[in-house]
Image (cartoon, rainbow, N blue to C red; front, side, top):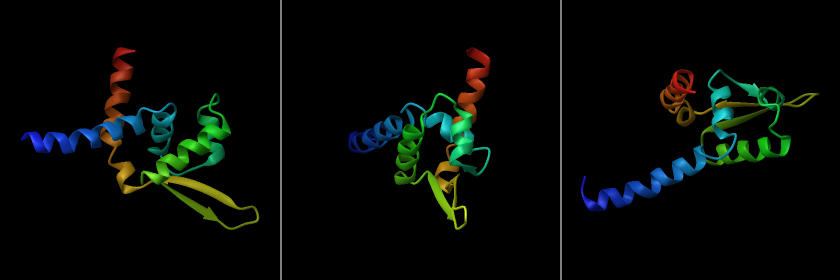
Length: 105
């Protein structure tokens, strides 16, 4: 890899680590690896995560193309979230972190 390629790669890697390193993001993604979830399902998964912060993180993940939001008409209106193909591509890394955590923490 030449110098020009390294300079192009660094901002992408930095942006990925900034997104994935935000508080609660990893736990939200980990839960969504199990399948589609409602907002309340995600709230129950991490009890100390506030609704406001969950909504913010979900919006960030949607904007990054990792999470897809589906609204099902009601009544009551239901909203669910699932990982996109891009989000699912994180599974090997997320499972690797999970295995590391089980072995070392």
